[in-house]
Figure (cartoon, rainbow, N blue to C red):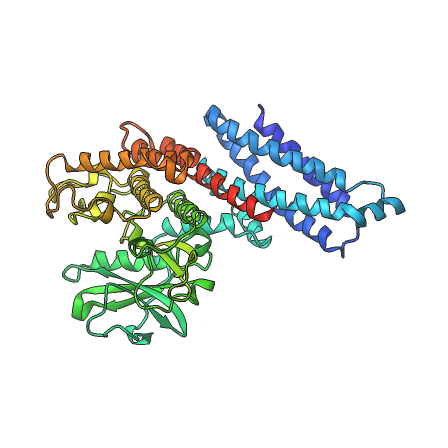
Length: 490
């Protein structure tokens, strides 16, 4: 299982395909597509080669298997593509190419695109970015070929680890925001509005006694999350911050609502997954799986980039919904899910001064280590805490209920946590996870249970948790969703 030599063989296949490509008409649209796709594939393979060359001695067997399987897939596709572009271009070959060859090649191009997408996930899962940061030329080539999947997270990672001076300062005047149903003297903590005729989502962050470091942390979020590529990661791009310190000691982060969702976001209030569940919106099974997968991808990618969320809950998942005319008995049209509600958080490598949640509903989303009393400090915030909270959200999606309703009329209803409450909350969520199979299937149930149980096991390193998160949570959810997509295409 020599991954390095297999990678080199695959690159040689790409070179052969480039030579074969030059024998065909360059004006042909399909041939043009081959060239563009091959360029992207070659960059991916060079990333593999660079990573394997620098980290070969540290690769675990499991990682080698993942890489080798991916390389086997791409090698098979490249071999078949080579067969579809015969070296001898005589009249009969040209006729065959026009009749059926192009259609087969177009299918192979689709396979290449799928491999490309899956490889990008693998790269982050194996934490390759930290090992190849010097290879900026490769990432520039990804930009040049129009590939934004890898570069979106890579760019976010670079901004996260930049100094404050390197980030843009993005102040916005609150008076520039079109406040239609909000009182300018009594603004909600979150609301939709418009800025320069575009739909925006505003989210308040409070500052204690004009604390300078808190202001800087809020402004840093605006700079870090300023990118048009973030919606592909199921995050919103931040346009800047609008100060409201004088009257209420807070600042609003202003996020742009992208594309089609901007057209369906005209209703009052902020449309979230929690509000959809509480209103019992008719949501198809496929849409529930899709929303679960999108949020899981967002969690994986922000951690791959080096950030933490700290507040993953269904009311921090923006979800635009079109329910159609009143009284219509059909499933609602569900838009793309976006993860919002970021605290003025810091990168994973830093210690957290966040105290455990005191709100009795919100703390049930939190890892048991963060459900203690006010005097308990969280030593360090890493993926296990966001992973646990995601598991709680997966339970909600599966049961089509928020935790507020799931825990209704049972358990502690007081603000202060009781002794043993965190363990009881955890046990109840795990019990719900074990009964989730008949509603969402065993794969989905196991994904939710992985989040809730493996994140609470002692002694697991972040690297191991990330691998388990990818293998046992994201991949099964993607496989379920792909099954729906295959059926729809038939």
